[in-house]
Length: 220
Image 1: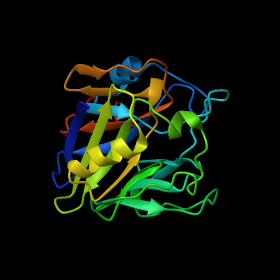
Image 2: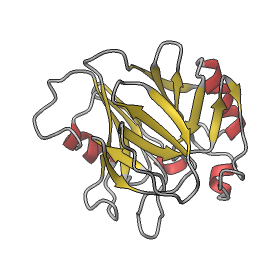
Image 3: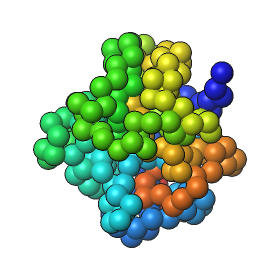
Image 4: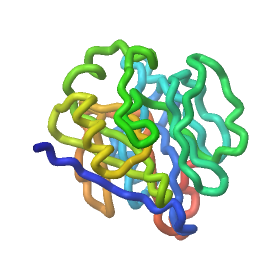
């Protein structure tokens, strides 16, 4: 009964690149989603991880081009290996990791799907914010491990974590987690703003489908 907007990314294709774009002034700056799209020129994009509203500092780990940009300390991280595999890693809370061997990573949560089943225990993962635990617009990222595809999904309707977990499971995700949501929810695809965030963002997942992206525009 809820419409979800979905982008599936074929990680097997050598023409595909998935990375994280950060706002101007990172890690204490925010920028409109539209402005980030104009700067980075992606094929597709969704909003990224949570951030502190007071300091604008993102909360989850962020790795771009194999280099750690931020150590955030959330317990769930989407990480892409050098050989183009997507993994969901549970890391010790507040512990710094080297991220050697990974090209891109972004922390988030709570976990929605784990090993092909709905798995919800947000408080155990350190989530207490009622805006996260209640009903809200949702953005999630998952992986179909059987075909090595990344699944990006969001809703305009305010729904529960369990409802979002059901959506990701219905999309055949073996693992999935939430990204930031609510007023941060955003999705862009092939020149169209599918869902426009209601506030500025500090980071976003960027997807490119060709190596011909304008020089200097790829996050690094």
